[in-house]
Image 1: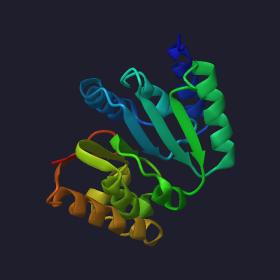
Image 2 (image 1 turned 30 degrees about the horizontal axis):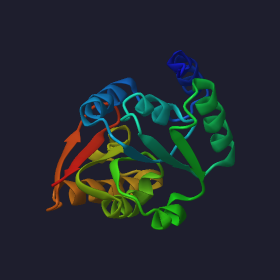
Image 3 (image 1 turned 90 degrees about the vertical axis):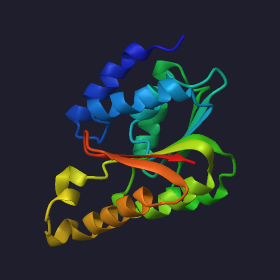
Image 4 (image 1 turned 180 degrees about the vertical axis):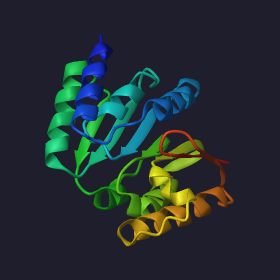
Length: 196
């Protein structure tokens, strides 16, 4: 039996060490989607220490599985250790590497794709997510409002490129002919898009 109690410790570790993990209200919103969908296959781009994948694993169909991609070796080790402690290593596979290198090799179709990695690459991740989903699949992207900068007149040089890329990403998804998409202004902003 999975020990989901351990999730509290993982969450505390993430918050204490400033590791990006899902904000409570965003997690709750996504979990409601998963409860209804009971997905067989989830793809996550950006594992960090495995917190969100572990939370999502509660809502998988009985034969469900999560593939999650992480670029940093240390995070892969931490995620795999956490997955083992919770006892769901049969449900979650961590793939180490750059998502843009790995995604083209994936061939199966996913019910849910969750994008939570480098903000400047959301457009490329999204293109792969469209290839790896089917009618009725849901694509979710986190942190699309980037601390509120995306909706403001924010113009600092350091973040300007990421902000502009996220604005174009949001615009593309909301106006995509094959999607029913919405921008959910909770947490740090979610895009939720269902394939028609």
